[in-house]
Image (cartoon, rainbow, N blue to C red):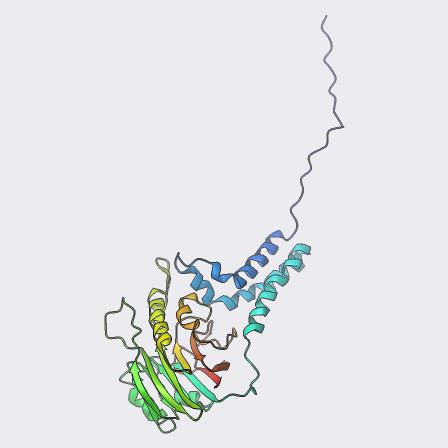
Length: 326
């Protein structure tokens, strides 16, 4: 006789495994922390692979645009954790503006200067000069001044700016006497052709002499093979930085198309020695829809108190004007 099978039993004393749901909005919160981290710690992004660090720093102000959509998603998902983390990128963005914002227009100043890459294909030098002189600058620095167009630029500028210095494709027009003009050698090693895009001059202002540098660093190239191609620009910046370090004058101005933003580490040899208004605005390139300020006015022994962009000319850059306190 066989025993009947045992009845199935359930041990209700054992706890059931329950699946704990992930906090709502975790992805949005993570993106908020990432954006804040990039805004504050951008220098930690390595530059060894395709110059990714420089690429990020070239468009750093635009990371702030991530805040509104992140806020929208957080509200839509009703996510507490996402809403709690959103002040991080928002605060980092506001901190950049507050740290570098330009002063009010009525802040005292001694000098107004204009910097402009006029483009070697500019069809309207006379109209461009009208735009540049509308703010009554004391100094005007131009890049991409071709030999063929030099007569046109001089004819339009010389009546009001009789003191001129030209070296290669860069030039300086001044209301005040100019002397000690010389080439500044900033040609990167990879360029073997005739290439002269740096100069230095002494301008005799009523407040005393100031050394004025005008420079046009090599252009950048963005591609799948080489990434953010800044090698030539970086090499040129090193040479310009060496020239600035050797400059004996107490007051130094640099006006130029540096093909990089003030945050771009590739310009550290220059920006470590001279300062400017570091607001995130006054974008200068590309002219139809400016995304970055790559045209700059920097100073040592003086203060750049305010920088702003001027209306579009016949160039692919916008002109940049600055007020300086000596």
